[in-house]
Structure formats: structure tokens, C-alpha cells
Length: 419
Image 1 (cartoon, rainbow, N blue to C red):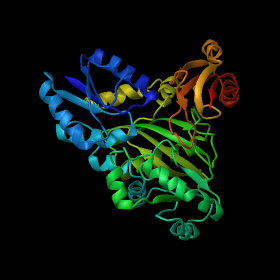
Image 2: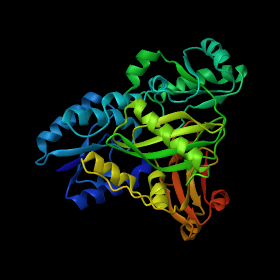
Image 3: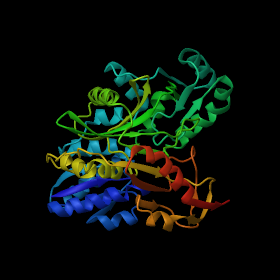
Image 4: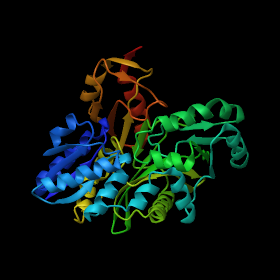
């Protein structure tokens, strides 16, 4: 039997592939990888198939050839990237394997369709609309109110997402964001259809000023098991790069219960009945308000953060579900306090050196530090990129030590760049 991973280049998914490698070995499975530009990823798998997994036709053709060539049947298909969700759903449907439906995969990627489905499902969410021109945006903003959020329809990682505080702000940023939102994702498998439907528009959403959290869940036979809730103290705008998160949440237990109930409603509204999910909320008072939902595991260091805090192996559980196995989900009764930092340089430029890495490695609070880039490579900064250039995960004994430790480590480790 074989497990097929559909992947797009993402430097933060090394640990995901490491775990997939150990899982396949443990269960006697071959591990197959399909992606456009494999390099280091090939070290973790038994076979690499080079194909553009953002192209549906090319992917289907490559999968059919792979099925023909392989001596053992493919028993599971998974993806660890957001753009891969529709492809994995399509391949799973063709092969008759467990996965979210193609409809669900679409709803979890198209943010306007997600909003519509959530509204039909009774999920609390911001007021929203779309606009193709700045004049149309002004009209819609008069109904939604300022401040508001501008965002792409098919983006992720907070790229080209910005808070707009007034009409002057809207005039200044609308066209720049609209252009970036489409040109920046022209490789995405949903791009052509989204451009046809929305004609180059941007999504406008009410800004919800409350605390932000992400909820990491496993869905088994349609039942939601919330595994962890991360607090996301930064940033507050105008851009929303994902810099720092920590778990377990410091919210009161009754608010956490409301988050768990809201997450289950989101899954029901989008049809997420198996696999992992990453759902983001802001709180309006104590009411969870949906920001976005993904029908895949959280990215970057999130899965490691969850495992350190709860003992639950999210990657292993998703592989179990994809293979038709029932995962063991036994969160620790006492949670460990864990934080992580997605690392960006202060200024864009070519990486010259990494200050403080050795000190961080020697720090007993630090579980892991990974720098994805090498000296000489160009590092961009938000909002022009969604992907950090490294991450650091740390543990502390008490919740009140999380923020101070984060700030200390930010002062310790620096990515130095030159123009």
C-alpha cells in the first residue's frame, strides 16, 4: 500500500514530511510525493513524481500514470498546504479514498463562498461584501462601516490583507491590494474560476476588534474534536502577518466551550467531516466570530506546538484518517505552555547572517529553531509575503511567562539583511 502526498513548495512543512516518513515506515507503506519542484522533500519519500499540483489536468494525468506504474495500490492521499486541498479532494474522489468532498474543499478555499455557506449555516461572522472598483468599495463601506478589512478571495497567510480605517485609507490602498490579490495568486488552482466569478474584485469585511484565536481540530466520522486553541496576540493591524501564537489559550473555560461549539458549526456549514482543520476566530465580547477556516492542518510550527502542549500527534492522526484508520486522540490532562514565533527580518533584503541562533539552541526553553533560508537569499517581509523565513518554538512553566519569553527571544535572534 502507498500514501500519496500532493504538495507545493513550503519551507515550513519539513516536520510534516518527517512525520509522514516515520508513519509510512511504521505501517509498512510506501510514501509517494507529487509536486512541481522537489528538492529537499525527496529525502523523505520513496518516490517523487514531478507534476504541477496547481494544475488540475496535469495532476490528474500524473496520478493516473502513477496508479498504473505502482505495484501497490494507493490507499491514502493527503496534502499539507492550503492550495493542495482542492487537488487532494479531487484525487481522493477519483480513487475512492477518504477525504473532504470537492465541494467542501472549494468552500474552504474561496473566501466569499465560505462566507455564504457560513451564513446559511448560522455561523456568526463579520458583515461582508465585494467590490471591483474603489467607488464600489466606498458604497459597500458605507454599509459595513469603518474600520474594515480588504482581502483576496483565494489568498492565505494574511497576504494582501489590510485594515482600512477610513475613506482616504481606502482610496490609497484599494487598487494596490486588488492588483496584488490577483497577480499574487495567479498560479492557484482556483484562480481562473475565481477571476471569472468575481472579475478582479476584493472582499470587504467588517473589522472585529476583539481577541484573535486559532482552533486546531480533528474531525472523525463527522464529529469534531477540538485539540488546542492558540491565542494570537499579534498583530493588531493594519496588516496581519502571523508572528506569535501560544497555547493553551488564556481565555475563560466558558469562552473556550463557545469556541468549540462554533468550530463544530463551521465544520457542519462547510461539510468538513474528516481530517484536520484550522479555524480562526475573533471575539465580539464573548461571541466567536468566524474569520477563516481551512480544511487542513495548521501550517508552520502549529502541529509541533499542539503536540508539545497536548501530546496529540496531529499529522499522525490525519494520516490515520486518510488511511481509513481510527486515530488515538488522548490529550494530556495537564497542558504544557507553548509559544511559537514565525521569524521575519526587520527589513527586506539579502540574508547576511543569523544573529543569536546558537544562544537560542542552548536556551532550555527553546524546543526548536529552524531557519529556512541560506545567506545570500532574498527575504521579503509582510504584507508582500505570507511565508516566514524561519520559526522558533519554546516552552515555559507558567502562562504569565509566555509573552515575556517571546519578547526576550525576539531580541535574541535576528535575521540580518542588506539591500
